[in-house]
Image (cartoon, rainbow, N blue to C red; front, side, top):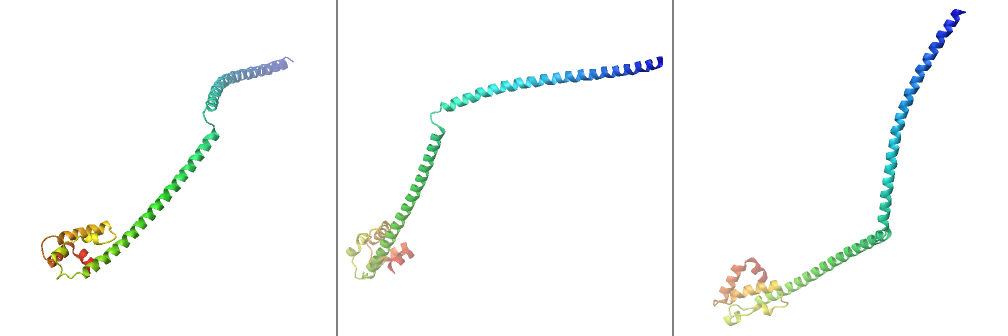
Length: 191
């Protein structure tokens, strides 16, 4: 009987020791949990503070938006109007470029027409001149005034030719001087 009590007492002591150790572990876990709880509470405070601050910023932004002179819809309308004006400007520039090109073509065509007519008149003029019978008085003539239409390149060329007809020399010598000066360009006119 005594032996049994000793055994039961020993078992009880072991059990109590285990419970004490378990309690110590629980206390440690509880302390750790309290520490974690403290950290979480601090983070929660920071989060609330940040939320409050962000809420203030949002309110400031909303107030700023409400105080804007024009609304988002008005901005979209202005942007659309700007895009329409830009497209209109581009179309207008393209139209003007086409008109300029057409005018250049028209001027070129008229120039060529006048150039060909003047060339034909110059050929006729030189083919009908009897150089052997032509006097100095007839040679000293403003050839450019005899031709029409008066396109500036033609007039410039003829004016340059006249400078060789004015000096006091024979008509044959004058034309030879022009031939020598103008070369193939002159020959193309009179041949």
